[in-house]
Image (cartoon, rainbow, N blue to C red; front, side):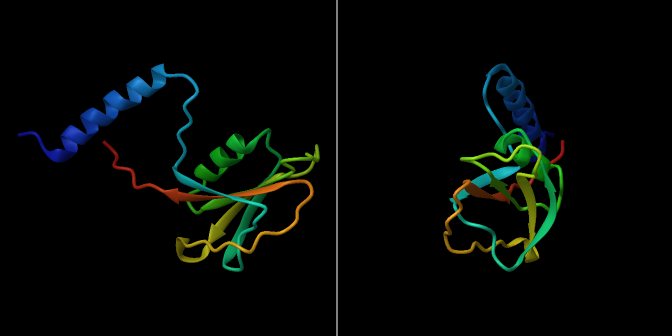
Length: 121
């Protein structure tokens, strides 16, 4: 007897195989909400800071930490080589708040990751 989980796993495997054949598709650990010139609010906790090549690499780092719910990526307009530009953020009870927009001449993006539930097959 085939269960719903078995069908889901079969269709998921087919989808993964199809996606591997399509170039330029990025899959992260959840849906992304992007905030320009805004930092995370007072309920956030800095997990770590890294120097990354781009925002994609920064998001991948966050996805590799189970308690990372967002990133702040600095130097979007004027990068500072040799300095951390990727700041991994954790939030109280998994709910992140954002501060009001500010003025960051070097450019700042904060990305909130709404992590998706994964069913392991």
